Length: 419
Ligand SMILES: Cc1cc2nc3c(=O)[nH]c(=O)nc-3n(C[C@H](O)[C@H](O)[C@H](O)COP(=O)(O)O)c2cc1C
Image (cartoon, rainbow, N blue to C red; front, side, top):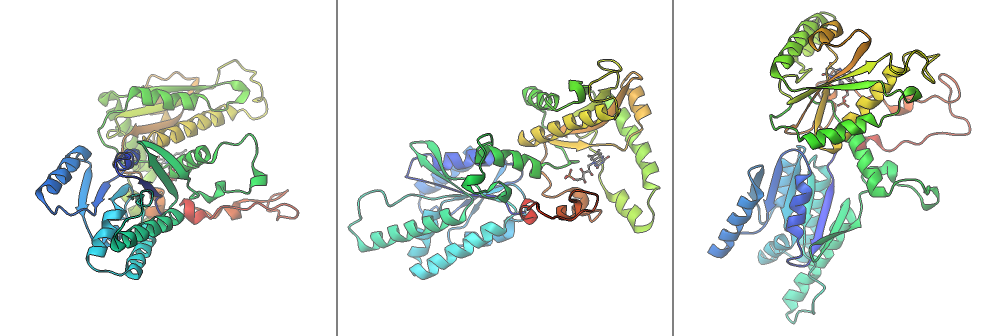
C-alpha cells in the first residue's frame, strides 16, 4: 500500500516546517528529511546544521537540490515518512540551471508519480508566493507563475493539503485515500462521523498489525490506561464484561511464559512437514521477552452468575465478548502507535499455573505490547508467503449459504488501496 501524501503550504514564516515535522512525529518508522536547500554560504550552512540538530537522531537528512525524485525511488519503499523541504527551492534550483517551464513541470509530474509509488508517507512543504504584490521583474513573475502552477498540481494530486496561517494549520483538503469513506452527499447520515474521524478509524483498522518486533522504549502508563479503557468499552453479552487484564512487566514471569511458548511451539512445528515446516520454523511468532509489557486477557466464565442475558443458548458468548475487548485494545493501541502481538502458541494450563489464575477464569489472549521500529506494511504471514488475504467478495453470501445477489449487492472499496 502506498503511503499518504500531504502538502503543507503557506507564506514564509507561517510555521510550515514545524507543522510538517509535527505530522511526521506521529508516523512510526524511519524518517528522512529531504532538503532541497544548498549550503551556498556560511550563514546558510550554519542554519542547516542548526535545523539538523533540532530534528533529532531519528532523522536522516539527505540533501538533493535538483533530483528529489531519485531519492524517493531509492528510499521510499519503507514505511515511515519523507519530508521534502521545500518545493520552492527545488523549483528555484531548476530555474537556476536554465531549465524551461515545460521541463520543470515534467519533473514535477515525475516527482508526483514517484510520491504515489512510495510506501513511505510523503510530506511536502511549499510556499505560497502569489499573495503579495506582482513582482516588477519578468523573471520573478515567471518564477512566481511556475511556483503557483506547481502548487496547484501538487494540491490536486496529493491526499491532504494543509494551509499554514500565522502558525495555525488549516486543512483545506482531506484524504480520499481510504476510498470506502467517499460517498455522495445524499448518502450521508446525520449520525456518521466527519470524514477526518472516519478516516482515523479506518486507518487504525487497516494499519493494525500483529507485531512481533519491539524496541525497549517503555510504554507511557497513561497511554496504556487509554488503551485498556478502550478494551473495557467493548460490547459484551448481557453487559457481562467478563474480562480481566493481567499486566505483566516482571522479566521472571515473562521468562516462564517464554519457556511455555518454546515448548508449545516445538510441538506445533511437528504438525507441518518439509518446506512448510522449514518456513514455520523461520517465523517469529512471539515477542514475549522483547516487549516491555505483556498482557494476559482473561474471561471470568462465572461473572454475574449462571443466568446472563443473551448467553442461555450460546454459552461461549462470554469468550466472544472477551475477543471484542481484545480487538478494541488492538485498534486503540495502533492509533496510539503501540504494537501488539497475540501469542496463542501456549499451554493454557501452564499459563494459568504461572500466573496464579483460578480455575473458573479462562485465559483468552496473551499479548505482547510495546513500541516498534516500524509497523509491518502487511501481515507478516503474507509477506513470508505463509498465507494470503482472501478476496472479501468471495466471503459474502446472500440470503442463504452460498446465495448469490438478487435485488441487493454490496460494493467493496478497492482493496489494493487498503493493503
Ligand atoms: C486468536 C489469534 C491468535 C493468534 N496467535 C498468534 C500466534 O501465536 N503467533 C503469531 O505470530 N501470531 C498470532 N496471531 C496473529 C495472526 O497471525 C495475524 O493476525 C494474521 O496473520 C493477520 O495479520 P495481521 O494481524 O497483521 O493483520 C494470532 C491472531 C489471532 C486473532
